[in-house]
Image 1: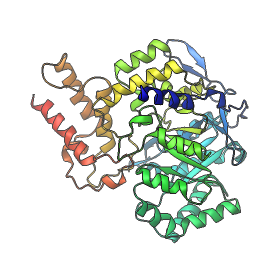
Image 2: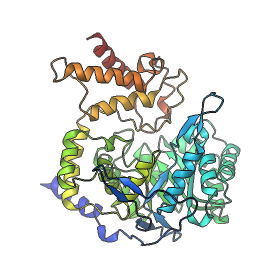
Image 3: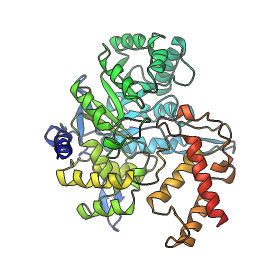
Length: 458
C-alpha cells in the first residue's frame, strides 16, 4: 500500500496540467512556403497547424520557447558528387528548418561533435536564412574527447559561434557531464572553463548556461549544488526512464526532474523516444495505447509524456524525415497533457518494455566511428527492431520459426554490410567510454553475433 501511495503522489506532481504555461503565439513564416498536410495513416490528410504550437516561458530570460525542440544530431546525409564519401544534404536541412520555423518550432540544439562534426555548420547555414529573433540556438562544450585544456575549450566555443554564424548563443551546455566528478573537474574546473563561460554569460554572449547529464547521480547532485546559477539542465526523460533507467548508465528521470523542480531550474528533455525504441514498442504495449487513442502512434504517446511536466522547457527530437517533423508538430500543436488513465496505461507498457531483450542503445552515434569499421548503432538498431516486432526467437519450436529466422538474417545483411557486422568486433573496447548510456558494447556485440550464428547454423 505504501508503494501505491508513493506512486499516486508522484503522478499528481507529474501531471500538473494546470501549470503547463502554454503561450498562444503565431510564428511568422519566412523562406519558401512548405506543404502543410501530412497523411494520417487512414487514407486522408490532416493539416499541420502553423499557429497552434505549445510554448513554455523560460523564467530566467522570458524566452518563449517551443515545446518541440529540433535536435540536430542526425541531419540527412547524401553521397558526395565525386563519390568520395558522404556529406550533409544541405538542401534537405534547409527544407526541414524552414518547415519547422514556419510551424512554430524555434529551439535548435546542436553540438560540435554531431553528424561527424558537420552539424553546427549545416545548422548555421539553414538558420542564417531566417531573422535572428525567430530562433534560439543551443550548442555545447563538447570537450570530453581528450581536449581538456582551457585554450582548446575556448577555441571550440568561438568556433561554434563562427560555424553557427551568430554573435551570441542562446543556450550553452557543458556537454555530457556525469561520467565521474574527476572528469567534470578536469574538463571545467581545473581548466577554468566554467569561470570563463560565466564571464561570457555576464557579457551577454551566452544568454543561458546549463549542462546535459548522463551518468552517476553523485555527479548530478554535486553540480546542481554548486554555487552557480544554472539557467537550465538537459536530462534524459521518457516513460521508461522515469522509474526504470538503466544503472549505471543513467538515473531515474523521476529523481532528476524532482531535484531540478526544487531548484526551479528549467528542464530540456533529450531521448523522449529512447533512441527510437518507444516509437516501435511491442505489440502488447501498442494494443493498450490503441484502446485509448486509436489514431495516435506510439511516438505521439512518448512525446505527450515528455511534454506534460510543467517545468519542461523543450523536448528535443532528431527529425531527419519530414513526416516525423510533421507528426511531432501536430502532437504539440497544441499539447494534450496526459491524464490519470493514460499514465496508468504507460506504467503497464513500461512493465512490458523492461521485461524485454532490448539492448539499451539510443543509436546516438557517439561510439562512432569504430576504428575497425563496424556499424555499432546499425547492429543494435536491427536487433532492437526485431525485439519490438516480437521476432527474437528462443528456440526452433517458436511459431513461424522459419519465416522469422529468414526475416532477421536477410534484414541484418541488408541493413548492415557483412564486414561491418558484430562478428568482426575484436573487443578493443575503444567505444566503451564514449557511450553516454554506458552500454557494454563489446558484450552486446558478442551477444548479437552469437544469436546470428545460432540462426545461421540452424
